[in-house]
Amino acid sequence: MKEDRKYYAAYEERYRTAHENGVSWSSDLATPIVLEILEKYEITSEKSLLEIGCGEGRDAKAVLESGYDLLATDISEEAISYCQRIMPGHAGHFQLLDCLSDELDRRFDFIYAVAVIHMLVRDEDRKAFYQFVRNHLKPDGLALICTMGDGEFEMMTDIARAFEVQERNHESGKMMVAATSCRMVSFRTFERELKENGLKIVEEGITESLPDFDSLMYAVVRKDDQDA
Image (tube, rainbow, N blue to C red; front, side, top):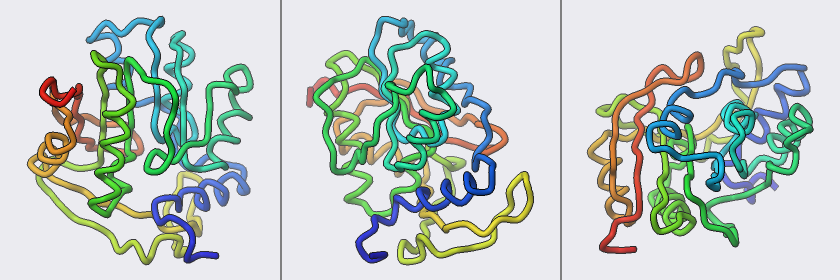
């Protein structure tokens, strides 16, 4: 029943609609900062990587083709199936996961999540996301978290309207798809959330992932030594 669905899982319906129309919802251009951070912090291909919210696999594809040991996850069955279908050689690297309620029996050297946290509106859900990241990092591990925003503007959508069918623009034309949730925060709020959840900022800034996101806040974090 609709009432039982998690508001932040609405992309399942959006992906399904796009794929039934023979297109992907997002572009296939990787987010540049992911590979840039891997190179900057000398995270080699022998290290273990986790992606939270891989979607249709644009970043996972770039990371996997660069030779990294990546586990790419998403809450959407449609997204995982799609990735396994378009990347059959890497099918075993994709796994269904709800990071707010599931646990993995592995810890990782590097975790990244692009345009995931802004889909979480409730404070308790955002806390669960950060706690998942912290709990799945190795003691000296790093994480890259990217969220839609310009560092100043704050807003949130009504989660009761998630899954409502709305007309949206797509590169293939107008498309009727499920609405999704969004919460944009300022750097001040972002920094506070990270600190409250035992994550220490190594660097932060504004980046982009065109054509889908022209402004993404990002933070590279590690476990706070005082809480490790």
